[in-house]
Image: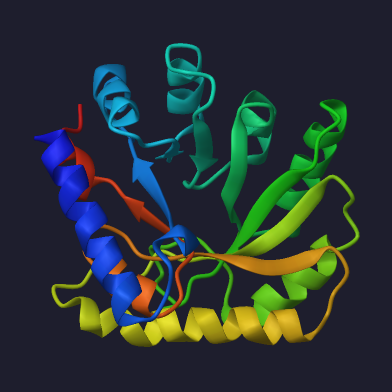
Length: 229
């Protein structure tokens, strides 16, 4: 079942890339494995997945030593400053940076491990009260603030678009994210890149790819519905 799901996702990604004249290699598939058991992650790994996304620090810590070491772990959920130290040496990227104080803490912990942590600025593109992230306007200011931190590197933007029945309803938000990335890149801020655009989830990732996503975060589409304890 999981392998078939993966094949379907790959097929949809390939088709979306072709529709937008992009190479499939331009888009990273992040398998969102929150609440899923290690056995399912191993099955996805065996089918070729190397990028996994988790929402909770505890889940990364629990799974990290039980799975192959060449997995690239992405922290995609809301991150509290006091938990940064637990994952700083385990993840390849933190997608959910929405404040200077969080970036500062990541910088402090990265220094301790003599590494530079790639991060994305999380934007609440639809202005939803239930979502984390900064406004479009504040994203530019936050990038400028973070720029002087030498052990973090801003690589782009992330957004969680609204839950919609019709993915077309989110196209405007994906376009806004792409334009925001262009606008920030045009400012030529030192230490700020806009290579990565982490947008699109199970319900709308083909649309996100058509609008410029370089990373899509697919959970249910690969692993099936989540069973919350």
